Image 1 (cartoon, rainbow, N blue to C red):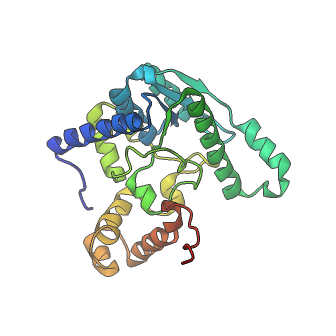
Image 2 (image 1 turned 45 degrees about the horizontal axis):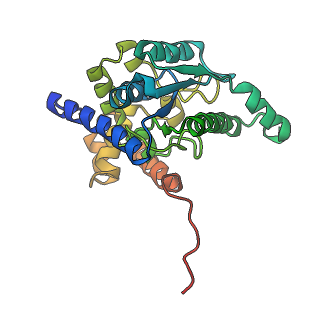
Length: 265
């Protein structure tokens, strides 16, 4: 498998870079506060650790937002992170809100994807409700791997003011998390978006993160062809490389500002 990990010197430079990015983004917005949804996963946990370095624990407000399908251990981990970092946090149950949405549009009941995305968008609304009230930024938790294949909900977890981890592949997120002191059990926990019961990221995407990272680095971000990438990466097939490329192309709309017609001359 392709090794995308940083050297120790590079790791510390990345840490400083992200911390400075958060600090400057807040300053540019005229605030010193931020709101962050905590899921108990590695991305939100690493973002929390670095945001505390940038802004101070008193200026980061964590939101734990369990839904009907949220795993109890994930929510416990999310609260543990808030308590460990000594940041203020609130717990908001999103299920009553999602139920109201389905009361209004019952035709969507049973549509796993539509309801899952509604959960993600409900969390985004709560993030901004709190952030607007506190004059704070909303920090995102997305990484480069998920952004490139569109593995996020448009106007859900993608609805944020900035993505501090947005230039890091998942393999690099894990490495940086270990470097800053995130506990191993959180670093190694199988990632899940928590949109429906027993969902995991890798099962839904149909590929492991290490393989995904390698394909993205060599074929999407890099110059290698589909077949050359499949030859270069162990245990990866041409079909998997093509599928990742299709995911990248089909999700382009998620990475762009909604289009408008060109102005008439």
